[in-house]
Amino acid sequence: MIKFENVSKIYPNGTKGLTDVNLQINQGEFVAIIGTSGAGKSTLIRCVNGLNDITSGSLIVNDTEVSKLKGKELRKFRRHVGMIFQSYNLVPRVTVLKNVMFARVPDMSLFKVIFGLFSKEDKLIALDSLNKVGILDKAYIRADQLSGGQQQRVSLARALSQESEILLADEPVSALDPVTAKEVMDDFKRINEEFNKTILLNIHHVELALEYASRIIAVKKGKIVYDGPSQEVTKEILDEVYRKEA
Ligand code: ADP
Image (cartoon, rainbow, N blue to C red):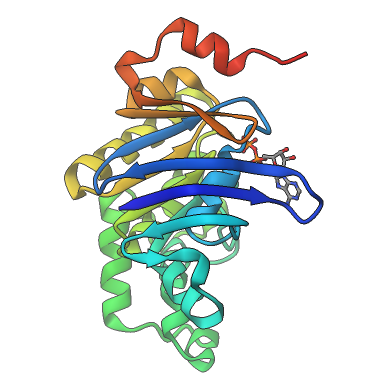
């Protein structure tokens, strides 16, 4: 469960990222955040795993008050909240399998990391995650030899291998062509339905958000201006969300 209570985020330079955000996302929901560029979508997502610290309010993720976490505790918490980025964030010259296993690195000593001595369990979990996103056959190929869609699947598998209940994704399909973007969204949907993972992603293709997510949260200037079922998003709501202010 993710719960924002009166959350505001002001960046050190004074820019307001979020203002008084209230929302609750239950386990197993598929939520898309929409809004214009600079609206606060990414800020909202990055608060959930503590990549952004909040300025005021309360943010609870699975019984943990995220703003109270520091150092080691914060790193441990983050390990259990999978995050997928627009640019995949893979290590290019390393195999797909090792890329996925790196997600579990904080559990290992530096010595083991350097020599790639992953445990059998880590390897099995990584292979299982690759299987879940349909690219088990690519396990021993170098990450930079894969297409963009395949690389995004690797990062999805990496997030899955963290065995987190929540998957966050910051513009996961923005760098992909429309067909591949849909394939990756299909993966999110399947993972949501088969494994009951909570999916919270932001996306600037509204049609994809409406097609795949069951709930839409629209942000504008750091505030929530719509929060409800995707079927109930009307043209008027979208006009308001995307209307440029003078
Ligand atoms: P979106 O994801 O909707 O494009 P962001 O969450 O990235 O929007 O940004 C929301 C607002 O916060 C924007 O005004 C942006 O310029 C600002 N912002 C984002 N990151 C920073 C930062 N690190 N420092 C200062 N301002 C930032």
